[in-house]
Length: 345
Image (cartoon, rainbow, N blue to C red):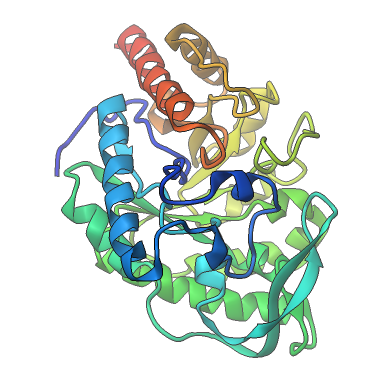
C-alpha cells in the first residue's frame, strides 16, 4: 500500500457519480433517495448488472487516483442510495410490503417496514471492500449507514420504541464494520445525516446507538453528518444542530460541510480530539472551484483545527453531479490541498 502525503490527505465523502450507461440518472434525480430497493433505476439487464457495476467502480477508482486523491472509496457505485442496499439486506423486514416515513425534506418516502427483530444475515459490503483493495494501492474507505439514520428511515411495526430498534441496528452495523476492517478497509465511515436533521431523538438515543456500533472496533472510524444532498435539499441552515455531542463519542473522525454553508469553523474547537473530514466543495453548483478557492476554504479551518487532524473532502457525496463536474471538483480539491500543504511545509 502506497504511503502518500499524510498532511491534509484528500478523500471523497463516499459517493461518486454513476455513469449514464449504468443508471438512469434522470429518474434518480427526480425522486427522493431510495430507502427500499429501486432496481428499476439500473440500465443493464440483470444478468449483466454485476459486471457493469464492477466496470463502473474501476472507472471511479481510476478517476479518484487521476485527480490525486489519497484515500479512495468505491464511489458507492453498486448502490441506489447510500443506505438502502445495507438496510434492506437485514432480517426483520417485510420487503414486499414497505412502510412509509417522512424524508428529511418532509415528504413521504417508501421505507423498510420492520416486522421482526433486526439482525444481519450475512456480510453485505465485504466483497466491495475486497474489490476496492484489489484495485488500488492507496488507503481505502468504505461507508455504511449508521444505526440512528436507519431507524429514522423505517416504519417500526415491531419494536416497543425506536430506541430499541436503533440498538438492534447498531449491532448489525457493528458486525458489518468489523468484517469490513478484516477484509482490508483502512477506514469505515458510518453515515448519520439524520442526527443533524433530527437532533432531539439523536440526543435521546441516537448517540447511544452509534456508540454501540463503534464499541470495540479496532480500525479507524468516521461518522458523516450533513445537511442533505444539495441537489435535493435546497434549504440549508447556517450551522449544525448536532455536532459538539460527538466530542465524547469513540469515533475517530467527523465529516462535516463548510463550503456551501460558509460554516463558522470556530465550532471545530468543540471537537479537539477528532479528525475533521473538512467539506470544501460546494455541491449546490456545477461551477468547478479553483484550487485557490479550495485552499482558502481549508485555511478558514486552520485557526480552529490543527492541519494534522484535517482530511480534505467534498461537503457531501458527489452522486448527483455530472461526472465531468465531479472530476473537475475533486481535481481542484487535491490541487488546493497541495497549495496549503506546501505553505505549511
